[in-house]
Length: 248
Image (cartoon, rainbow, N blue to C red):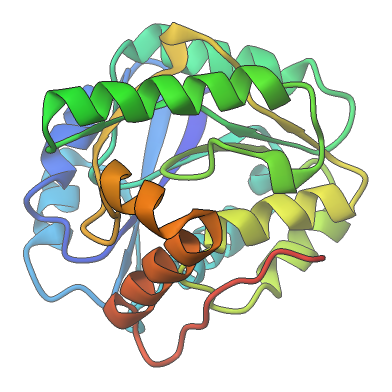
């Protein structure tokens, strides 16, 4: 049985085809969840032959929920959520590694895979990746999502039961922070968070335009840096969304 890969897409005509072509077609079934797009995202998904679900309202969480609703009981099987501008570097190893990690869990689980951010100076990209890997190594056995360091475009879920699925379907339209909200929904259902250190699970994605440089992070400090990034994200969002706050 092929693994479902939900791909939320808002005006991703520039990236979607490359992402779809990077997937191991014999192993995965792409589901493109288009939300509020006004470009050629729909045409590209149709050309590829992907399963398509369209919502008029913009919102990544809304798109994910719409796709999960369409899947019904199939959403209880291990599945992957992948941004439309993100691609696995080692497609078959990426898929097989994720599925193996999820299926061996006996309870609901969420996995945040390693990410290689592109589109910025190589030196800073390497430093960021090394720092992220170090934090992952430090906290890789934690199930406390406050320590989870691989939130982002490469996420896999083992929802497993209808109670958790219903909880996920009720999550508000958070942006930024929909990935954190999904993680906490899993943890609240006695689930587990896992951050693997496995080169085969790396995905590549452009670094967000809301990000700030390492120099600025060092000057501002952790809390001010977080607030700055959140403000930039919020300005890019839509009026119906709200930033997610980690539970204290």
